[in-house]
Image (spheres, rainbow, N blue to C red):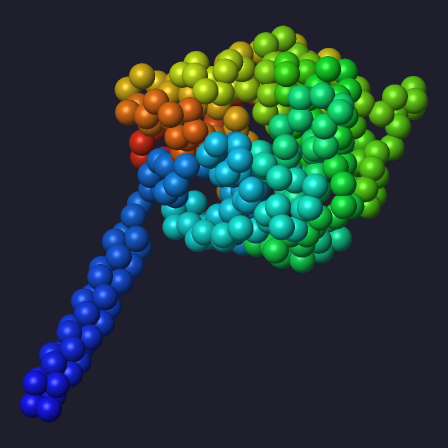
Length: 338
């Protein structure tokens, strides 16, 4: 009995010491986090790629691909931040359990808010022909952190049009309120007008549904934004698994183009990282500051899936052209949405 009493006493003491140490470590971590001046790159741990950055309310959000072998890409996480420096992970906001037709390769989420609902567009299954089930899907939730549920129970685009593999979707809202889906792999890019319920598409005036807008050098990863009345169309070039992945852009007076390639604005730096590409852009309109969110591969990594999500400043010259982005280890300073 005496031995049992001693053991119980020792165990109780151990629990108290452990709890105190845990509390001290937590406090130290909080102080360290609060004292951080910049985001650092990567902005959060883990292998993540193809990030879409966006602002909802008073928070920044990033929705990336989970970077792993295709068969393991059966879910998506999201991350939110009040200031671009401190990030919270929201695990498995969508997965193949809620999208029954998807079974692998859930890629490149794009999200938009409409009528107090959040619509998450994604690619799944990496289809190689029209004889396979897969393509671009859409899920919906009441909260940007999910959980997201399949919106229509089947792919929104499940076929090849104009040679474009149905992947790498981006949803774009124009100034007139029209929503477009811009997408495509295999070096072809299409644009289509979404209907009001995001359940299908509205044909253009000439009767076509999918218009090809592929610029010179396009491979995948389209993104579009408006600035000063102009449409900036951006995309990735090169092979995603190699060091020379990069981002280029064009400018047009219309979301339908034509788009003539202007320049490369994001690429590797042999002293920082390789494979910088598949990006998105965040514009803090309150502070009129622009950021590019992208993935890259650490110098010591050779596994193609070992990609991390990073953020750096994006700036324009006096003529409205995008200046080449310097990729950094420091990332960006703290900046709240408002």
